[in-house]
Length: 216
Image (cartoon, rainbow, N blue to C red; front, side, top):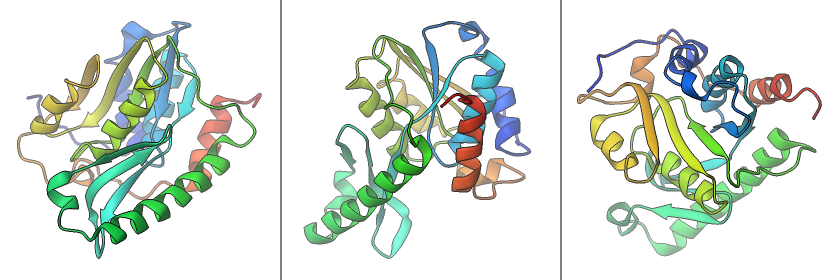
């Protein structure tokens, strides 16, 4: 849909994406919400350039046992659980629950580390710009959007550097607006669109959130 791009790293992707979101700059009702870990550097740059707050929402992909890169769903705050029926039917129910339990524990661990003493995410009535470093199947961003919807935001804008055409169309049905820099028909992974797609650490997530929320 949009011309292919190659991003130097997540910060570069955030800089470019912010230029597509200038209509939201400086507005008191706008909050940028990043998905850790990789979505936080992208969201950090957007929040900084738009001069709006940065928040974090924990989402965990549910990986197929033995093939974790294949997601059969995702979980998020507010008891959100989104499953792919076509894949889940290939997994014994007990194993599905084991994976969900393990990812729930990791979600709680990340929540404690990333949020610390700051209050919980409050988006009621707000314009939320939901950001990740890219989208493949859309499992994580769909779970995040559903978690946000349960808190009754005024508007949800999904903003990502890269997303395949098929998933872009799906997200248009669950968000009020979807903004992407690159929407290719041929897509194998998010990482292929970055020169540097090295893993974002917990420490980096905490550092960026602390810079954005110095009084927290």
